[in-house]
Length: 607
Image 1: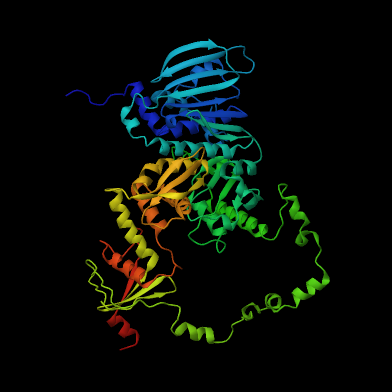
Image 2: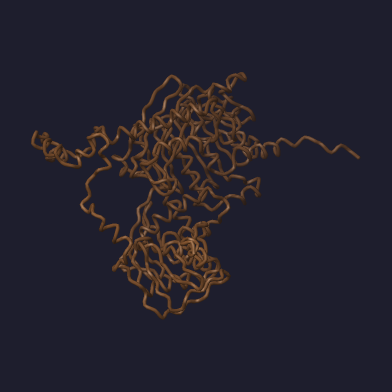
């Protein structure tokens, strides 16, 4: 038998190596943008066609390259950043991998024009499949213009793994935003299929953040600024009221490089403890600066996961910096030059507090209860008698018991049957109390409705579409660019589930129709909440797009706690719940009802 181990041909080795670096168009976007930043550019344009599959082009006004450098930059292991191994641990620039351009050239067709400021002419190169096809002298502007065309044209199997255009575009927008946030002093633009998506003028970090997440956050950002010998922390966090139910705008940078760190995210979340609900996520754009020797960025191929030499110190500093900022925002007035001048003339601002005013405030019992030691728990209540407690235990006349006579279907496989003539009672406008053959059940109206909707929508998603009715007054939804890209991706699936949503200019959509069996009027809120919920799922690979959509819609459409239900509505809800294939839990695993069996109830009373 002959030898079976042999060296791979160069072009195949290059394609395999490229797969580690360039996994999708967004990977090339990241590398090319970072190279432009490192070239000292003050203006960087990103142009993509067909979500980067057909074209990713970056044009910068940086220092450009000589003819030899233009050739060399596409060689494997070529870099301008590392001369000896120690340099690896002191790198402060962005695109130091040295594999990026070689990787891009291995899996696409590349055209490069570049010129240094002092040169009279520039260099033009055409490369595909790692081979230089053309090299010539050209007249061109200072800087570098590099175009990556037809990604994975020579690796069809890789191309087949790319997602839909809107999905790939979302990744591109994410990478673009991360680099743009890191360098607010650089102009960035993003053009997709000939339409400008972002136009970010150079300015302060706060201005750049507002350009990206929206000017409505202007008064809702809190500055973070903490300097120590070990590290600096700076940036902005959102006031507690900006927290969302899903992970939205959360950006963390170490030495100007975007990273993912559940550990440091926890530090920031813990600074918000007791300020926001435990299931909410705050907005933050934070930058940490520390000696590169303290950080290992080479833990992960995308450089988004890193290791700190002393994680606990970093955690403590980040948590303290955010806590300090949040403590200050509520008591320290901030000077904002965008403040409406008319506000300055209001009585509350312009008139001083008189001695009489001070005296009347200080004499109030509420003031005294908080300023005298150990008095806070003696706050007076207008209804401090025991009548309120008595009412709690007596029958609430406002609770409407259901009339008798409803027929209940028996639930499948749970062994419970509801008494045919039972009276249904709504408790706290959240729960439905119903007697069964072996005790009673307490049904959570919102979670029960979620399970019912989930099963209906799941059936519709894989079968007959939900019928929609056109809105008499269609609602208009204006979104951030990221959310607009996401919604574009969901339009056909939403139509299948009863929502007719149509694009209406840049980042704007009109909801023309909604499910026929739903009350009209809150379509806009459903779509906005749906996008927030969907983003929450986006990192969870185990769910298909349609499954995420069905789960999100079920949560958005479910009747919420706090809504009064009529007897007929309660009966219909309980009936439909126990007709479900899995009535006991929501799709997310929360219980829809709790059963109290007679034996257990007796044991509570020691019977």
